[in-house]
Image (cartoon, rainbow, N blue to C red; front, side, top):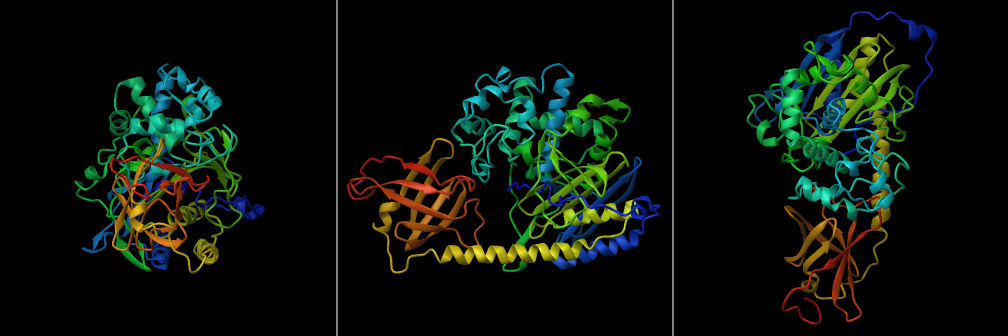
Length: 514
């Protein structure tokens, strides 16, 4: 799923010695850069990487490493199409900025002035939410990704269900990375223009920037003469995994592109909205999109003292890299991780695309590239990443053991397995089907299926190590005063207590169960 990879490299600022700050940059050693990237890939078994660097309006690096098709040994090139995930969000913000320039949208007016049926759980957020809030992660909502991930829900379906989603903080209370408000932002542009979000991106961004091979769906990607398959880890082995179609979530993460074409987008941002002699977005709008809105500390994927403090603007994070202003965002979707960034004052931009979700090397490659092109003392980013991942693995193992210790041995379900089978419903998340599978149960949400394994009493563990599902944790069945299983508690949103789904009445249900 779309994850909060945007600040994967973000940590706190380190004071640098005067000599380091003033060191004259020499011509980058690109052969050494190649060797470094290759070593980082080998460390984490990354099948393929593409790296692009633009400096003073010139493309100085655009190359691929490794394989876009590991099985057939097809190489990654600067043209290889990969999913950019949440880097899509900034494209949605650009569409909104164009509407602001045209006088059709105001960043600070309530969304309800444009979408009268807009509803949130919180009446205050319903009344006060602005377009700026939609694209700055300040809505108060956690991710609630299960509304769209692997689902058949449409963009409009998701929009209509926002009113049933509980927040975890007050409106504008704190930064919480999520995708639903960006889908809403895309939906807003559709209602204002009468054009699909996809057509707007093609006509108003791709075409004028010359991004002729970039696209918006997996289907389009697979028609390309140079596209990458997605890969992940299973039992420590690199395996090809299924593509993830993101139709409903398009404005939050569906763009597929190459470093060759993403560099054009980054240059457009560095050039204050200008491309090919045309001002696609006003300079004022670009400034607005890169003006901090909310503090976004705590989303760092590495240890160190080179970046930060970090804020979030409109679909991009704004921080600094070793004392230099840095605009940055990342993206992740099944089998792909990416990062785009630029130093606006130095006019250097970096794009890194990878086809592997087993380890996020896009962030450390980005950092290393800046070290090289700024002529700075190089940091051991590979070593830091190894240390951070090792610590993360220890923590994860500790959590796993603690959860396993919660099991009450010698217990059994209070009902026959068949009594738990049925359809359960939540007004926001829709319907979940529980069915008998062999001697156990299977949970299905639209096209997503996973096993339920008995844990203790009426509690079942969701999934197993070989099943990729967006729900992790335990399912708890509950009974009414008549002893009938009538509710199901599921961890549909990790930041909230389990959501309660009510059993849908079925004709012919028997008194003791279904």
